[in-house]
Image (cartoon, rainbow, N blue to C red):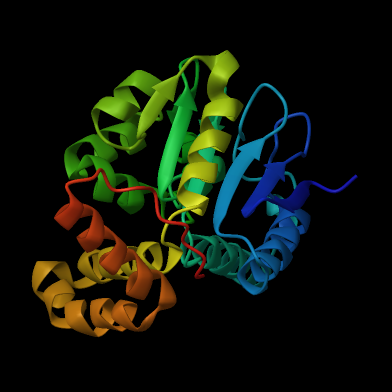
Length: 262
């Protein structure tokens, strides 16, 4: 059975972790993630929903083979994991993670690479790495810090505590907490909503935020118009702005625009 399933329907690519019993992330799953991200990038999807089967999102890395890996093999494997996760993070379309149950280690590091994280109210998050004497190998601690600030990121990393979804929402790591029974439906509905939006503008916002994360406000200002002005050359913007002006002049409410570009 494949540990990762990809399907694309009505503009939404759905990635499902399905590696029971704990959806641990290992070499095979990451290889399939690489293939899935390539297929999404080359296909018709306008948004991505990442979710998991079973009671838990993921316990993190598959640690069973680690004692057998030499240093070179370990560096090569973790380098490949990092590259695959980063490729998912850099998809130019909106990505949404739906998280239930336990979300630890590499599972948390994958979830926070999504643009939007929606969690079930029973979800718990954590960095268990310190319990085995290592660090968040795939960039978890500083991606959490980007959302929640350094103080909470280091506290959670030092203690490996299981952080409830509500606290993660309060500190900005999670965007929204919903009843567990509604998680998949709410996340899928949000993915559908953004999939029918202006995906080229979404891609531009993602590029601006990546630049801000690396270089701050000044760096993002430097590239703003190089990123933004080409949108005026797209059919979506060329039709949406006149339609909005027409509605304004007529005193009518603006109607949802049928965006098509990708």
